[in-house]
Image 1 (cartoon, helix red, strand yellow):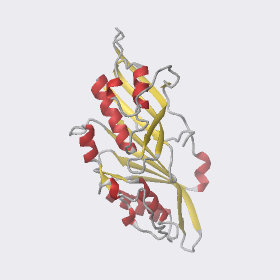
Image 2 (image 1 turned 90 degrees about the vertical axis):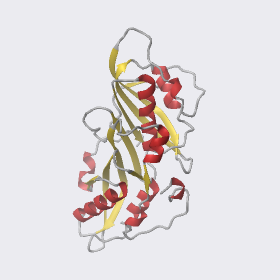
Image 3 (image 1 turned 45 degrees about the horizontal axis):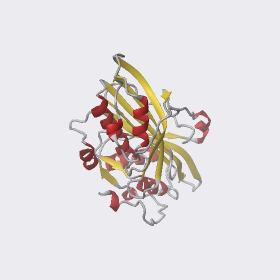
Image 4 (image 1 turned 180 degrees about the horizontal axis):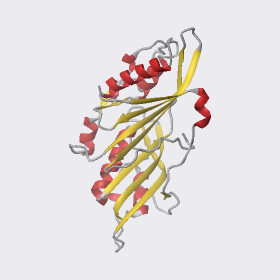
Length: 275
C-alpha cells in the first residue's frame, strides 16, 4: 500500500453508505527505515486524530452529528491515509445506525484493523460541544528570535547545543512556524510543535532554523514528527525527549502526532486556535 496508490490527488466517488474498504493503510516501516528509526523503537506515543464532520442517520432516518477523537498508537504497523479516512467517515452520512454505541464499535473495529492495532475512539455528542476547550501548547515560544534563514528542506546539521557550562537543563520549547507539505499532493500542512527535553541546552536559534527548514519538505505528519525526534536525538543527544505537533485540519480532520522517549502523561488533545 504505497502513498502514490492512495486516494490523495485523485478524483474520488462520494460514497454515502458505510464502506470500511475505503480505508487505505500505509506501512510505517519504509519511511522509518529512511529516517533511520531503529528497532526496537526509541520512542512511544500516539497519533491523535480529531474529526469535526461526522454524521449518520438514526433508525428513523434523522441525521445525527458528533465530534470524534481517535488515538492510534505509534507502535501500530500502519498509518491511515487521511483522504481515505475522510472518505470512510463520509460513508456514514446516509447509513442508519441503532445508536452511538454501534457507531463507536464500527469505528473502533475498522480503524484498528487498518492500523494493525487497537485504536481508541471517543465520541462527543452535541449536548457536550460547549464543554470542548482550546489551549495553546505550553512552553517558551522561540518564534521571536532574530535569525537568518536560508534552508527550506530539513537540515539536521543546523542543530547544536550550547557550548557553555550550564550542564543539564530541562525545558519545553514551542514554535508555531512548522510547515511541511503533503507527500503526495504537495499541499501545505501547518503546525505548532512542542519540544520537551532534558539534556545539554539546545541553542534555540539553531532549533528554530531547523524547524523552519521543513518548509518545502514533502512528508506525512507522523513522519515529520519522527524525523524531528530522530534528528534532535542524534545531533543534541538529550537524556529525555518528546516531540508533539498540532497540525491544522484539512477535510474536517486534524492529525497530531506525539513521540516521547520517557514515561509521561499523554497530551490532553486540546485543539489550538489555528485548529
